[in-house]
Image (cartoon, rainbow, N blue to C red; front, side, top):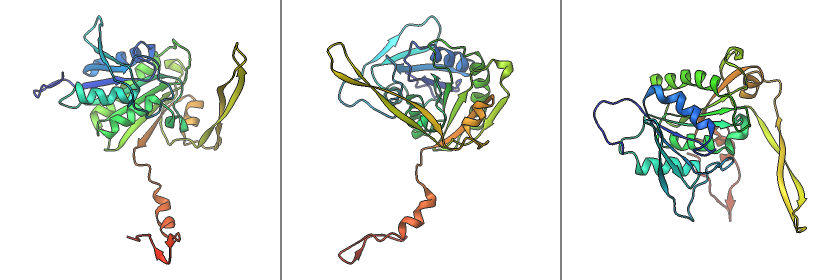
Length: 272
């Protein structure tokens, strides 16, 4: 348990949504090990697409796993957010200096952030006011080349440790599938406007029972915009999007206050 109050190296909590055995989390451990003490708490199994789900109907189990190095590794039979919550509650008396999630096998750009377990764990760290970064690589294979992500990711980690992040803000970092020498640079940009067009493939099992398999594709609502994460990734750049946990649409506040919320001649909107 991390409870020392004396001067120490930064403590970094590592998690993901692909499970503690995934090659992406090994790459993330490699990325952050030079910066401090590493504690890994990750799901026992893959939890892609779980978003901010938490486990409330079954007991959670925190298991210490053996490693050959000095990294502390735990697995949890729950979601990525369960991993962060359980780690904060059971393993830390002093909060970690940084939370990193990933490296996800596949993109988390644009609206994918709303479905992503990788980014949900990052946002959960943000809720604790701990600087948090989610990393994703646009390669969906089981064993992609993470070398460029590790090298460039260290630059991002160093900047966050040096400069911090505002409370309520975390980073969504996506890497294109390119070799180190082919990456053009890093773009700090905004989230692209788009939507996943879901389709359900209707099939039959061996007993003739119908079932449905989710498929679909991403539709870019602004393909000509050059200041978005989708443009950056399509053009050879690493994208960094600052994410906030405040989902308020401030531009709509005054307009909604003008609506007629009246019941039996009594108005129910407080203007101030």
